[in-house]
Length: 103
Image (cartoon, rainbow, N blue to C red; front, side, top):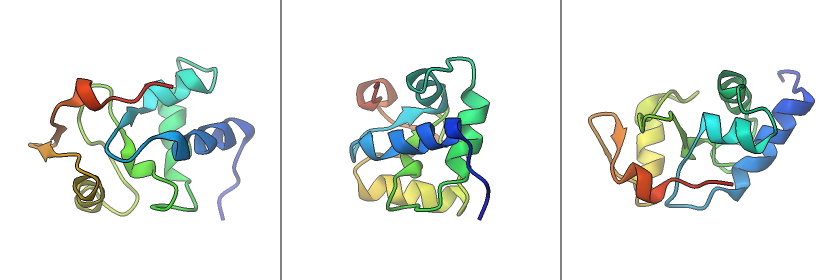
């Protein structure tokens, strides 16, 4: 198991708050954790999620609405999102601004 820092624990603790059918961004997670300039570090923390998909890291996307990476592969992330009603077209979240979750 990868060592998880305090910051990463805060990020991982935010993931269960993202409702099904919504997405948030790595930048929003970083801001909510008190480090608004740490979007990349938030992404690294999400990648360490030991409880995916039960803890919904698949609901975290890039700030421009692109799906972004996923430890199990992007296709799997898109399938999880679609199962929750989040549609992806050409690698981007449809209705991104309407379904964006802010903490």
